[in-house]
Image 1 (tube, one colour):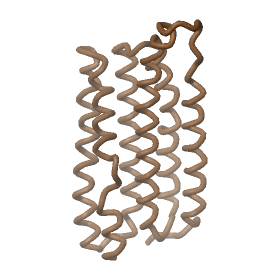
Image 2: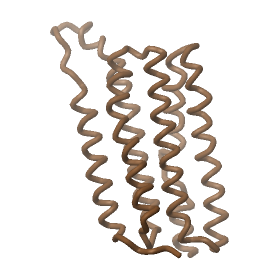
Image 3: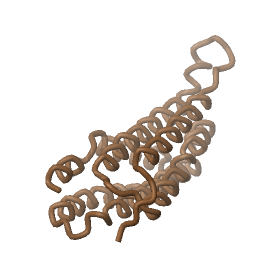
Image 4: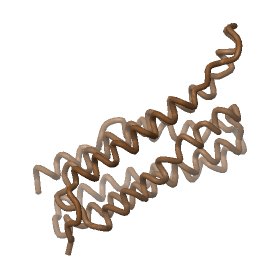
Length: 198
């Protein structure tokens, strides 16, 4: 039985605040180049690339998180802590983004970057699972949830498989993050459909 412990609007407001801080921290990591010539500016391209990919990823999580909570009716302890657990890993993205840019996309930094994205995706999977518990017995929701989960599992697998491939080329796990972001650019259609069907 789901025990309501908090209004979902408060959880969403807290999440919005944390994500706003995460984005702000990433922006602050963009350092002004030393020197006024174009080469000094162009030398910062790894930092800009890392920032752009991370910003897009965080923004996509924010949009999908909003859609995910839009259909929820009850927030219990499992959902509350799953959300906090996910935010913990999400809040580490600025650190690994900065390290990726500062290292100029080395293999080790790319592996760590892929690793944090994997951790965020796994935590988000846990959040989706916690929210789905209140729809137990809803066959329409279950069918749509399983279909969406396949996409999530493929994304996690893409992260995991490409992490060691950073030893071949550091761009590989970074490219995987970008491709997964592209796949999730629009929220899953099942979110809105199941709310109507429920």
